Image 1 (cartoon, one colour):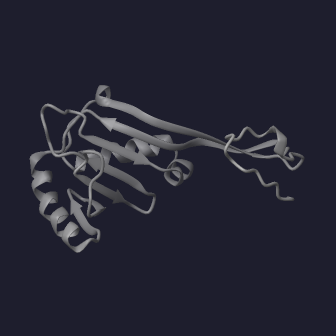
Image 2: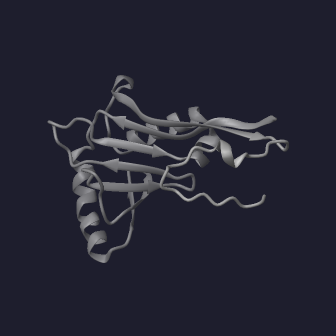
Image 3: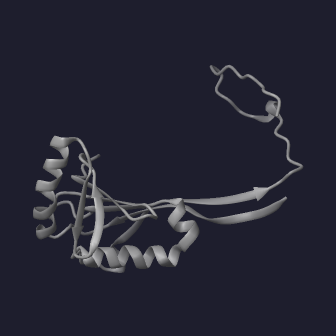
Amino acid sequence: MRIVHRGFDRLELSIEANIPPELFEYLDPIREEAEDARETRAVSYGGADFDLLPHGVQGYRFILQSGPLPVTWFFKKPNARDPWGIRIVVGSLFLATQGLGMVRAYTAKTLERLGVRYGPHQVSIGRTDFCVDILAPEFEPTPENFVIHSHTNRADHPL
């Protein structure tokens, strides 16, 4: 058995901050337009480029996706009573190719470009996945060793 790669596979951050009112005023009409057309819209703000999705999810008004190394940004409508207004999801491609340090720098720079003010104590890790890829040519799964739900029908297939 040989370890081929190990590293973070997914990282979700929550930021105890809201987007500035100017950014909300900029995004809201574009989001309405995207929703009416049922398609994403390209947006640029403060030197940061995104695709704005035509819908929100779970209390987040805006979902934006950025870059060739996908990062998904979730923004709530600014609300002083709900300070955790930003969630960031970084996928495996960015983490595997650029590393955690670059992810930290990229997210900090993007939030700065968007005018979001926050400190390091206002960042909370919501979820993280760690991956270990192994090469084990001698490994053969034994179907009897798998635990499956009692209502599941198991069918073994030759490898």
